[in-house]
Length: 168
Image (cartoon, rainbow, N blue to C red; front, side, top):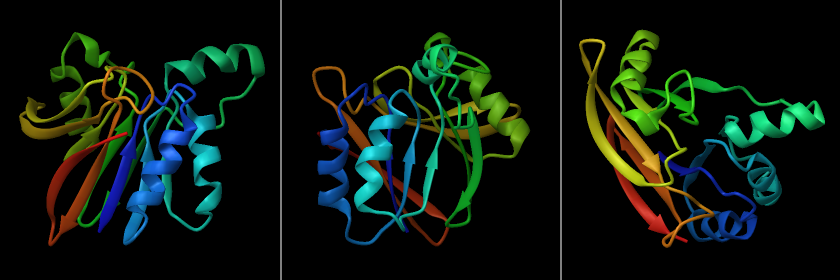
């Protein structure tokens, strides 16, 4: 199973489209972690049958005040390849910019094995203790900001997860 993960595109839908095109072979799912849901909607128009998980970020929170939108959940718990994932942006329920422990504990309380989060714009893959369990925390980085825009590519086989990062 191959999953592409993006976050924080901030208007850079062309980079999302390029990454999807280059990684489309064998792709099982796309996950978007907020701050640019309009970008991923546009990029995924070319892949109407590709399963997707999309959560809202703080950018969507801000715009929903003015537009009344808010069609995307703040988080999503899902299973893929025998692994339970929690997808969220990272600005709440605890802010990952202040550390990952509280988010790991929150994920453990939900029964998640892996947290996919954004918000910091820094690609990262580490294991953090939370709620008495070890929780894997993966951030794809920013698809639209920073000196090296990036995404994560997850490969799952027999319940084992390998994470790699791609540059945009």
